[in-house]
Length: 388
Image (cartoon, rainbow, N blue to C red; front, side, top):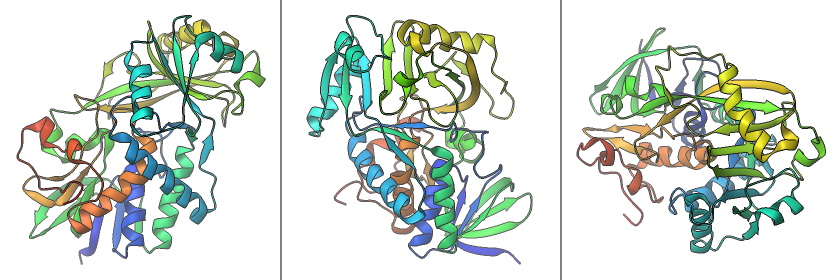
């Protein structure tokens, strides 16, 4: 017999696991389906540490979502008993007229966030691991830090199961079709019926949402961990996480935690568009060189032995903002956030929004600017904005 659920969630990574938790604790009968392990390293929701920052140059409307995310990560820590968030403060640095510094400053001023501007020399005196170009300005915001992504996913999944959700790993969704006012989902193991369907498939979104197949661009990303020559300068209490623009590109990085070494990545690494099922998952010398060169120039005391190199996937939208919406023509289907490399920090709040959309048809959060139709030209889905 076909099993029936109030909500079926496709993908149990960052966003899907959070959606399962929020749906289940509201009393919905939930099924979460994951093609790989839980957690896994095949997509975008792994890597030992992930930045969370309140100063957000990308768009001022992200800041209220971040405030809600911080609150929900704290709640998840308390309810799960797991340590998930480490506060180090954040550095957003660039030339004084570049977007990273100016946009981060604007977000702090618009939302009354505590912050401080440091020159490059002042930054090095305070945090000697940093050696940025002399003309750079650094915005320090004390509330940010890093999340532990695998632990976050496990905490969401365990919380969902404690609230009676069914979570199934290593079960691949083959297809879904509308079925009355709900959906029918076919996997390589069974067939399920659901009143609502949340698609949080990351780099595989285009396989399940045809409107997105020509819009999203999965991209190969590589991270490096280098053993510092002065480890004490790269401990969490002496090295804030960073978001940095320099002539070589935009980089982000972390203190030593979990894996030996200072962690660094370059946004859009080597600009390699990929098929998520067929790409080189093994980092190589060219990948290492991109990250070592920047480390030697701007964090020279971190540029010791290579300790680890790992790949992951960015799934980019054309404007690099998220997609959170109900599907036009099928409002029982909610599509969830290919995040262009900066979404994990929002997962706790996006899970709440996905539960809102699935169960209530709308949300109190301002997500009108994240609608699907801005990219596809397909008619508006009817998702409510703030105040509706």
